[in-house]
Image (cartoon, rainbow, N blue to C red; front, side, top):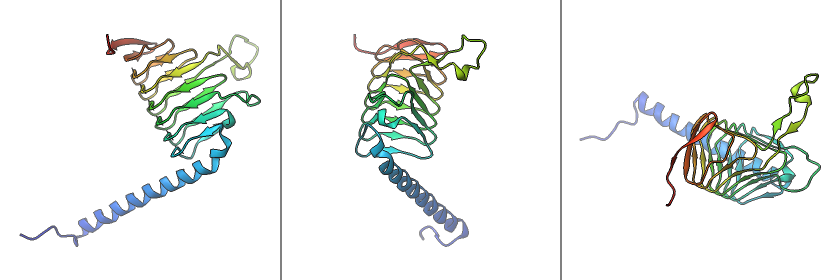
Length: 205
């Protein structure tokens, strides 16, 4: 029995395609690693083997601490408001993965634990926009309701999740896609909906 024919047009096209995909992936990784090395010195801390994939929007990076083995996907926005301060306002723990097109916006404190997984298009903020003054546009009224946000070790946010000020998502918990989280999610729980509610707990005891 003869082996597969690697000389047919279809087989050749597949081999060229596979080589192109491999080259594309290697090129993207090289660009991301080079960019990460270039910007790392501007951060409060930037751990070994962490990668930020461009294009990305960054603000107040001297107040952002990134652990080791962190991945921040393309299209994300890491922002600290009030760049005149020196304390760390965004902290991303070791091994955390932010898939891409996510926003982390801090006026005071956003803390992500170790090995947190955040799917695409998540929005995490420790503040809200003021809007009570009817004589001015919302964008001109500054921020209000500032309260610290924490995503504890090992939790997972699905796509399009919104995390509001003052929220703690517990250790190992899961927040379902499209949820709007305005109150705490206990450890080892599943929360879904807008506003999010806990629908399952699976922790010890």
